Amino acid sequence: MTALATRGLTKRYGDLTVVDGLDLRVERGELYGFLGPNGSGKTTTIRMLLGLTASSDGEVEVLGEPVPAHATPAALRRVGALIEEPAFYRYLSGRTNLEYFARAAGPAEDRRRRLAEIDTALDRVGLAAAAGKKVKAYSQGMRQRLGLARALLGGPEVLVLDEPTNGLDPQGMREVRRLLRTLVDAGTTVFVSSHLLSEVEAMCDRVGVLARGRLVAEGPPSSLRSAGGTLRVAVDDRPGALAALERLPGVAAVAGPDGLRLVVTPPATAAQANAALVHAGVAVSSLVPEQERLEDVFLALTEDADAPR
Image (cartoon, rainbow, N blue to C red; front, side, top):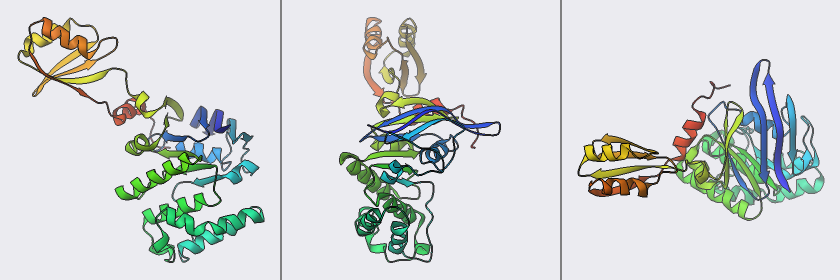
């Protein structure tokens, strides 16, 4: 069963289109990263997924059920969510806030299960020692952890998380990554939006890149990189090397202070570039591939994005 799906999902505010014909499919048991610059439409998409905002057009399904706006299909009771910065009663403790939330709605059995899981959820997000403190004394990162604990109550089948590592230090980010991977390995589907490229690359099975409200790329993080590559080459004869490579289709060479930088585009290969240099009598002392960063791919895909909405 598909965990989350949209077909032609669109959201307009007057003449401004925030989400534009979005087709999205997240499979069960997947850790899916929803990547895009601030203002690209990520939060608006999430709010439509959860029925909190009406779409202008298109369809949304959660766990196989349609999700109309401002309604609560049964499927949404199996979803935990953290949207933007979570709101809490500042003069109550973290544990008491979770108790209020656990009692707030749903069938009696659901409420009892959420109440029974509070201490476990606090421990999982690293807040067990601070559970008795008032939320007004929490840092932003601690409030973010508390929001994640709230999303975990009830053992949701799907977690929808909007920028879950906001305010966390590197250690906290690492802990959240490990927690989400543990949940996915146990069968939970996690849909996480972020503008932090390193986070998405480190933890996600699949990534969708959103720009101007449109999905501009999708796939495993490694597949978003170009099929070619960049090489740093040290040679004994730069003019001879540049002349030899100029005749090789698919290879662009630029001389730098520490050697040559080659951009290789398929069907050309690094081996062909090396062979051309050797054939021209140029001695190659080193040929080092440079891994293209996901950040470079992201910027190339989204460089024409509109100003924040």
